[in-house]
Length: 419
Image (tube, rainbow, N blue to C red; front, side, top):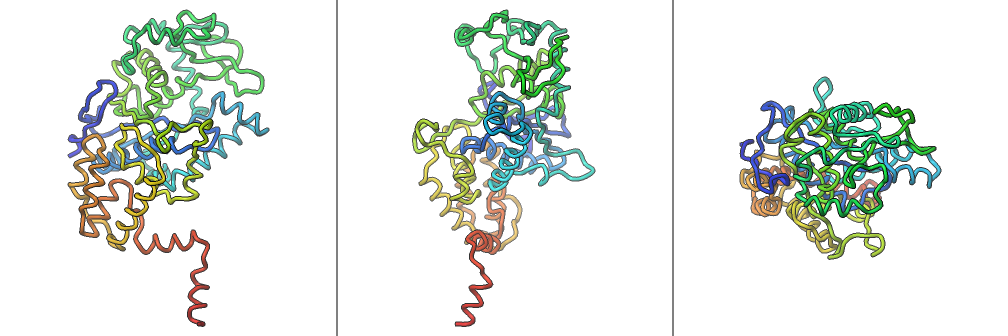
């Protein structure tokens, strides 16, 4: 069954069967949050989609054979600026933002390391922080310089894009188009407009570490090298799946590929590249200037996380999604019907009718259609469970709703009895 899983590979622009490099292990990496501010509703989409894939892989291959790394970017220009703006340390900002992020996504039914890791066994899920992997970053950078794929200029280390003949294979952007875009405000120390920063000197007050490449002044990493280093550390030189939003294909993922492949001399960084589509709000691109910028926390103040998850999964992950109030209302009514039908039943075997659409590039709209057709409570519970839904019994959900409302159920019962 596991070999039947087919995923759309951005690298080949085609659906391909997943064939793990290591038969006893499936390895997956996804780009996670930059922890400087609250996550917005667009950030929730890849988190939900790739959580679904993680759950499906565990179901197909076994929980002990799947390793999922989702990174945390905790060194970044936006982080530095926000910490200075609030008058707090960078660590205070990133720790606090990460704690809020975890609280929010747990309500979406997204698995966290504590949910799946077993003491004494290799971790099934890792959440590496960039600042814990500086040694790996400088090691990669030094190797790239030695191999002639990077160079030192004015206390920076830059990747030499022309040294990689097939640069651009992932995004399939014409070289002249990339060069035209890169020529805006080109740094004078670059050999080519396309060259990108691997390491740069730190400004006063910014985080800093000993620099690679023989540079005397301390510095900090560029964004792209962070993911290459964390993926290498936890998943190896090559692995099975790399996932992220469609907006990351270029330049971030393209540059990850360049760094990793040129460092290790491998034909690929990951065999399959998965990318989710954009999110709009009520038919318009989400932006602060339009006044439709919605944080995940704001949505969760009005809607249960399970409703948000179902509303996301009703659209195929590669298609654009229109985030609407009507969509949330429909998802809420659907969950009410399912909980009523499932009652307090325990889940049975996973229904093949729901599993099959998921094996076809995570076709969640078709899978949800099959869940609607399930009449047996145990099958309904199991079918929805494949999608990370119906995680409670009907009774537990009702109790949770009363607790969330602030109503003292015992006091209500006492008043009824007294009357």
